[in-house]
Length: 151
Image 1 (tube, helix red, strand yellow):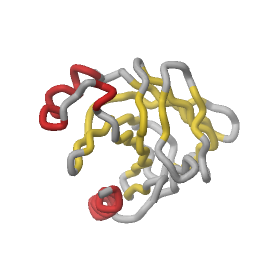
Image 2 (cartoon, one colour):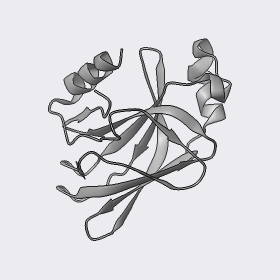
Image 3 (cartoon, helix red, strand yellow):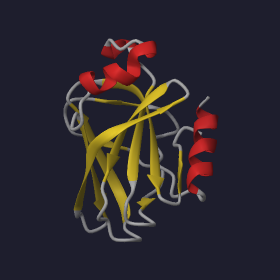
């Protein structure tokens, strides 16, 4: 199913951007800031990158799959998760949780930033959430496309 997600993302956007690597596996996100290990740096090719966080474990959130479209915004309203990407100089680029993405039964949180200079490369990524999120698949999406870290 996740390979279909990647195919869809690539078809919608065109070319893949840099891989967001987290050791090839989903991650758990806690309530404290935590660094996510990147397999390779992330590059913003168009200046408006997005980070999609697909939730594979809805049971822990108390969300039923058949009601996830209505329930997810109540359980995790916009702003419930935050990310900060760092470039080589250590400049911080906060990403804002602005909405949701649903694909083939998997709900996702959309974090975005629309003023990143084209070509900016990030070497570090930190995340935190208002509540623990387990088994999260991350996709770095740029207007040119996206890739999956556990592919």
